[in-house]
Image (cartoon, rainbow, N blue to C red; front, side, top):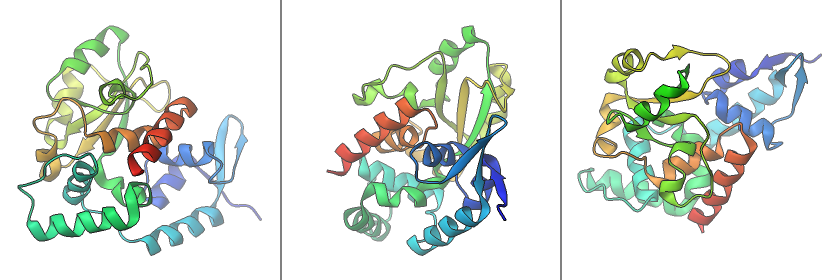
Amino acid sequence: MMEPLSIPEAAELLQLSPGRVHALVAAGRMPAMKVGGRWLVERSEVERRWRAERLRGRPFAPHNAWALLCLASGESVEALDPSVRSRLRKALAIEGLEQLAPRLVRRGDSRHFAAHRGEIPYLLEDPRFVASGASAAAAHGIDLIPGQEADGYVRADTEQEFVADHALEPAASGANVRLRIVPDSAWRFLAEARVAPSAAVILDLAEEADPRSSAAGREALRALSS
């Protein structure tokens, strides 16, 4: 007998973002059915994937996830402990970014908000906001035109102030702002940036539910891996 789970429930069990689970469904990599406008997945399939992901290794701590993303993007991480840097380089060389993607889920905890359309340009210019996904595609030469939306990273200890300053309202649907909250301990990898490293932007796009964004991200991921 089928025991269905909603996308958010499956995401919680898999320790992935709902957007990542949507992307798996959209790509046909996770069987699902649409009932009453909602996608549902079978619990047994979620549990099978959970077991498979555990065999691949535990998720990287946020600090190491960002260090690896910087390395994959060709950016310097000289302040990192040499032994840690060596292990991350080895993991990247052996497994590649695409295979490591499930272990990089702790790079940011996604929150969805609704904002007044007129506020989006001001949000994108806020120095506390580091653009990613479609908001950063053009900066990394990815052929994707962003809509009237914003996607990016914000430091955990500035989240509440940022949300209040831009009058953002939590939104389960109809969201036009995605904030990816980065723990304070890992923020130093983004502290001087206005745009996230290319590897992070590519993974964020590849995990999108939107087919156009996901396709652009997957194409860029293949190019980066090669």
